[in-house]
Length: 111
Image (cartoon, rainbow, N blue to C red; front, side, top):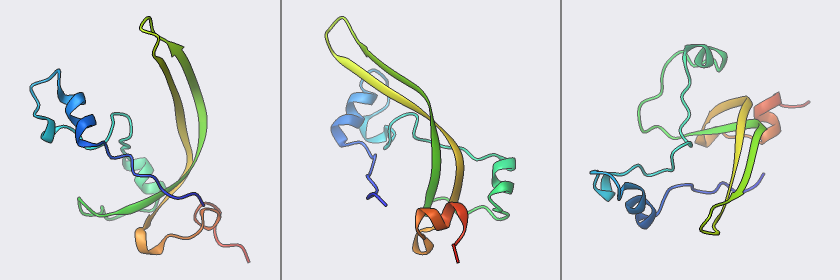
């Protein structure tokens, strides 16, 4: 499995994101817009989460995704922009200490 990469923004990135607003840079979100995931009642039920974890609890999300959209363009300033949209199709949540291989987490342990 590839190594996990922190998507947390640097102080400079946070300040730049907050610059056009009245929000102080230190109070700006720590992670870029679009990286937040909300699980509703139906999703929680499918994941067999009967008791909600406490806020601040670290979990590991293992997911299979499908690319649903790609975009590549260039603005009048010459700067190129790229993005990819991903749809989570299968996932599980594991306490960090109990993380197994991706295959075990998605498909169950093979005999």
